[in-house]
Image: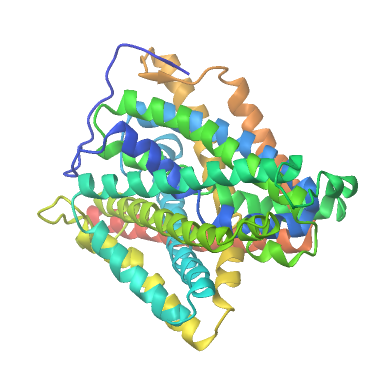
Length: 458
C-alpha cells in the first residue's frame, strides 16, 4: 500500500478524535484475538485435525485483502459507519443500511458470546461465583468503560491488548520448546499428529473454516475507529499493516503448536492453550494462561462493544436507526447507542442461568458466516469506489496495490469459501441462516426507505 500527500478529510460527526495510532493498532488486535483464538482454535483442530492450518491460511489471505481494501476507503473517508457508508456510496442506501445492521447484529451476538466465554473460563479456575453472575459483572463493567471518553477507552484497550500479545508470545516460546524436546522430563509429541493431516477430509476443513472465519471477525473494526483517530490516513495505514502480520503470526503459530501437541479427540482441545501448557508440565501455567484468555476475551468484548455502538450511531445519523441513538454525552460518547448494543449481552446472562452451558455454543454457531458477507461487501464497494475515483481523477490518501487484480482475487476466494461451505451440512446451515437474516434486514431497510420517501413527498 502507498500513500500520497493529500490528507484525508475529517469526519463530520460530533465524535471525538483522540485515538492515537498505537491505540488503533491494538484495538484491531483486541477485537480479533478473543474467543475465536482461545476457544475456537480447539474446535477447529477437533473438526479438521492439523489440516485446520489450511483453513487459517485461506481465511488469513482473505482478511489481508479485505483490510487493504478497507484501509483505502477509511483513509479517504473516515466514518464511524465505515463499510456501511462505503456500501451506501457504491451500491445505494438499502445496501449500506443492510450491511450496517447485519454487522451490528453480529457484534451484539459476539459481545454476549465473549462475556459468557470469559465467565466460563474464569469459573474453570475459580469455581466460586456462577458463570451467569460473572458474565453479568463483565457486562456492567464494560458498559461503564465504553461510556467514558474515547481517549480513556483507547488507553484501556491498548494495555489490555499488550498483555494478551505478551502471553501469546510466551505460549509460542513454550510450545516450540515442547515440540523440539527442550523441556526436561517432558516427552515431546513432535509432529506425529501431522501424519494424519486431514482425518475428516474436505468436509472437516470446510467445517473448521467457518470456526476460523469467526476467529478473524472483528478485525474490520479498525476502519470504524478511524473516524475518532488523529490523522486517519497515516494511522489507518500503519494499523492495517501491523495488525495483519501480527494476527497471522499469532494465529498460525498458536494453531500449529496446538495441532501438533493435541491430537483430535484430546480433552485438552476444550481449552487448547491450557491443554498445551499442562502437557508441557509447567506448574500453574495452565491456570495462568486461562486467566490471560479471560483478559483476551474481555479485551475483544471491549473493542467490539465500541464498534457496535459506533455502527448504530452512524445508522442513526443517516436516518436508518432511531434518532435518539445519535445523541452524544458530554464525553462525546453515543451513550444510548452503547446501551442498545449491550442489551442482548444482559439477556444472554439470563439465558445462561436458565440453560447452563448451552448458550455459548449456540451463539458461536450463529454468527460464523456473517463475517463473509461483510467482507464481500467491503471488497465490492472498494472495487466500485476505486474505479469511480480513478475515472474522476480523484487522488486518494492511501491506495491498495495490485488493484483491481487483488480485489477480484479476494472476491474469487470468497466465492470458493461459499462453495466449500455449502458442501458441509453444518456450515451450509450457517450460510442459509445468514442469507435469511440478510433478506429480513434488507426488507426492513427497504420498507423504511419507502416510508421515509413517502413522508418526504407529502
